[in-house]
View (cartoon, rainbow, N blue to C red):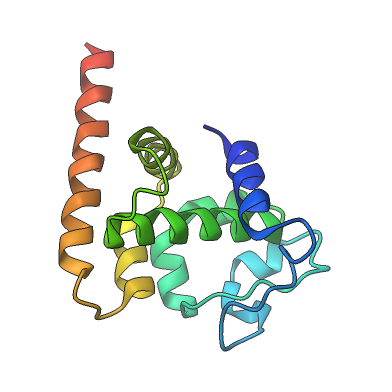
Length: 150
């Protein structure tokens, strides 16, 4: 899975007509994305996020410095929200492979999924269990990497 795959899935998920215009959050402010906002080359569309500036930096870390388009971050945010919600609700809308692939991409990109869960799921009952499940997948990814490096 690469960023283009993630963007395609996010596009399909939200629908071509309303993907960029759907309002997800209470704030419509690109300043939330500082320092990313300073680097964005095309910002024709606002990026609505549920998470504050500090949390954004904690979650997306160095990855945001390498991203030039708001749409890329929105797509990753969309897919992470979907996958994490699926894991939390055990709804199985996504296959284990899809979950694994997205989390592996996040792992490779340095995105902190556990912190993402804390800020997006908030204080719901399923937060600890979801983090445990995601951490188990992340440990599996680490083990796979270690085996491949040997």
